[in-house]
Length: 273
Image (cartoon, rainbow, N blue to C red; front, side):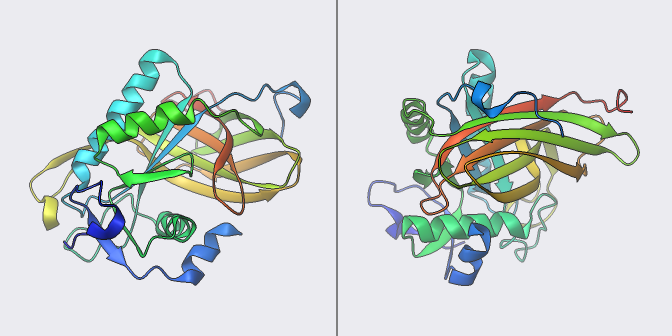
């Protein structure tokens, strides 16, 4: 696994790197019933933490633990810190195909590489509010970035609700309201709360990997100033799992997060109609 030492002289942490981000790849990413009217939604600061990781990367389990620690702290404190673990697919040729990997996650990371002016993409990479990127296992840096993000006022008000709409097949309905005075992109992510994998091949062979908030579905929508809408998705996570849905508005040019909210679903869809 190669090293991307040129990312920053201050971050001499081992990371798995993949150079040669394609501009077409990065550009690809840049393109109900509401619970309240947009004018009634109070915008509040939030920190959206995206971890780009892979079960095929030996450097990633420590970053997965960092994200899990941030998640647990947010649950204890009740602060508006929304964590997401996005598994990329470009390490699937190293002997282990990550069951949670998806091309759209790699595309999103490619867009960040372009926005940050990086020469390539790497794992584990953590991005906080689309403004700060660093090696994902750097716990102190992650804590500092989250604290900084929580001090930045939101520029868009986002409200989201999620419900099971079908038991068979399992289907989730997500309703959102967004209030903003400028056009923006809305990112919608549905994540499986807790996942464990016994890896049998590749760089992590023989390890049992633990994950929090593993993204299983991701959607990007371009919105006008204010918008209400619905996202309906089939759920492919494990039966009986808890689901976390994060909706976050981003600046189409800089990719910075300008507002966010989250909702959770119980582990059972038995109450769906």
